[in-house]
Image (cartoon, rainbow, N blue to C red; front, side):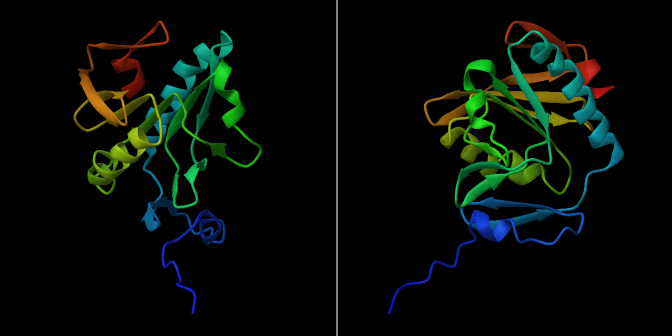
Length: 178
């Protein structure tokens, strides 16, 4: 008798209902979260606008979620924003992003904070994401993590008065959180 793998795979994710929830896979475990609040979406809009300047300069492509980022059959996330540098745009396919983007941004909420700063952060590092930002609208900060080996090192938390350097652009935290 063949063993049955009880973990979810990407093909299972594609059959999930369109019920307003966001479904992701973390090492075969199904994660579900409710649709984001307007404040969350404003932060995403601001990030897309600001990172769009880098796209306009030909440095890469910025994409907002929901968008499947497929690392393997058992690990598929829908980050809030990704940025892929121009030389790596081959990871952006017609259906999804297949592999690690250069920058992944998650906007934290009460329901996602623990997973976003724990298991997902470790998975992003393991699968090759170069930089990860955890935006906390409540605290008014952005935690910046950069990959070293297969893990992230926190560069620091930047408050409303600060700036984040990404690909030579200085992004004001206040503009992101506005």
